[in-house]
Length: 324
Image (tube, rainbow, N blue to C red; front, side, top):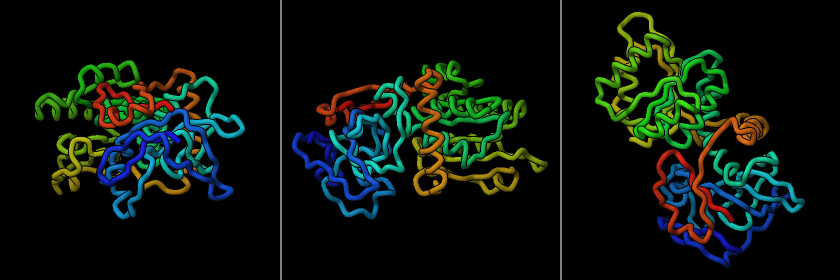
């Protein structure tokens, strides 16, 4: 079968037309004819062996891509999380990690949406415990997942959504996706902190969802820092480290501020949360997208172009999708 395969650890995937087809191993698995699979940062890191989830694996030639959209033998069109790689003509999915798709959602959108939903809805719903009427700050909202987080925060009832980002054009576009305030990360540190403090005084920030970490997180935490009196309770959830994987955190910030720090990602999600993701959250989000109420942009390429596109730099918060 045709597939995108990593033959040697650390190398980019290569297009091959004769890779062995996967075989169903038990009654809980199904063979799927793949139609589309999105390329995420997670896929790139796992393929290179740099992601923490692959540190202990014994390497063998493998198809890349963790999930995708396709058709079952009975003609049912589904999204599924792969038992193995998904950027191939055929793949194996588990029955319990599969979602039937609405008729009026296209393959590229259906393939691109789930990872962004996992990186936003799970953080908002399970780690932050977002309540209706609360104020949410999305740090790094101009990326694919950040854009989805803005929309889902509003869908879940946030009264006010504040978005930060470095891409000025994408930052302004967020105003049409549900953001109430935008703050550029390109301005000087003092101006950024001052603006955030003003917004904090107007509507205390209940939830921070952070995709950047690094210096931007340091600035946000400095802006939220208390003065020794009672401070507002803020749940700060880190989902990514696109700016940097580490920060310098002053003990005085934690001692002067009612702030709760946590993370959302592989290793933090509980089995019952994944069940809800498959049974409730993803079906709801697919339907919202099918109805035009949840928007994600894609750049689509054919499978044969995977080698040239694998590390393609796509601006503006769009997701690369391989069509098969």
